[in-house]
Image 1 (cartoon, rainbow, N blue to C red):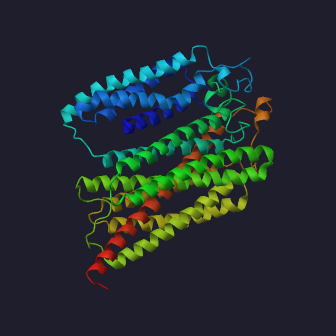
Image 2 (cartoon, rainbow, N blue to C red):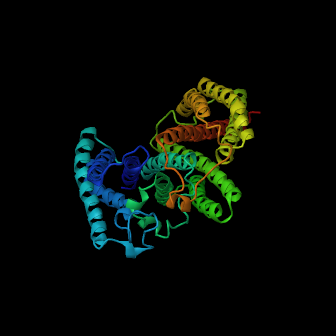
Image 3 (spheres, one colour):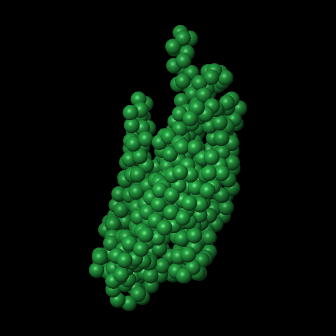
Length: 481
């Protein structure tokens, strides 16, 4: 239920943002987006339930549909409220429940019931598919791996939203936190949110962050459930708690950034924005490591060979030592490159930019070398081979994106100009143009791909370190020097 529901939630939220963001000169009407989102929900649930044994499809579908709708209430609240006065100003939202529409409770209940119905229908269809495929009953560890993978993938849209907030200078478009223009964050009317692209990006970034927090909490709780009575559970439980701690700190850091940005001028706000952006990259890397670990455990419990860290001695110890050192250097290089890029994005100072440009050559060379050595020494390790090839593709794409972003730089701006909420409300700043949106999107894709590169480097180091430790322990056990 949990795995299917979370995958559906992430798919629906991503589609919701894409169909509502007022950046391209149009936004889809509710008459269109409503049926589209329900259709996406039905398809996503059906695909997930096709992985569930046919005998359990209806019950699991019913539960997954309700869980999906319950989490979606975080976003639905924006449609259950209405402006207190004229909808022409962003500040006309009611502070709390008094802004709810008269039939809000009925709408919320109906939404949960609709989720149950869609889930039940998807369960029946998914069961028919599962019956043809003879889907097996999987252990809790298998579903833990899938839930952890979903949690990792859900961070990518969040990184994209956060990157667009920075790239379009939308970080101070909402004056308060955790509220939004004096309203409850989850009850701020969508009719107000969609009036300004900067407000939409900043506010939807907050909503998505809340949803991501819920997913991480559920993943962490299920980690403890799935590893109950397991002798080796301590490590993966600690990893899950680390990921949870990072997302909590990330949320608090984002709130502090907003408050300092308004109360303390630009400097403190800029540095907290810098820390907020950098921490997001480490959070993603930790989540990828967690999901790989969980997937590896499920493969081992199912007896699948060729996992992420075989214990065979097919790779010379000397090669493993070299590879371990190289991957450590690569992780350090990517982190340094990330810091240079983040400093420029948040300060527009020339030194970090040119350092970022020059140091990119080092990162490319190190990533290519790491990818080559991983694939060369992969042996039976699918993990080595996949990470090695992914490093090649990712760093190549990153290099190209970097130069595209470089040539899109507006050299007339030598400092960060982030309009504040009061300036947006008073129409003292120009609306975002399509050119600004496209340029910001390129820079954002470059940033997100950089996060993927960091995650691959950390994952490669973890795989190498694990194989090295396994070989070292095996050698010690038999008396090998």
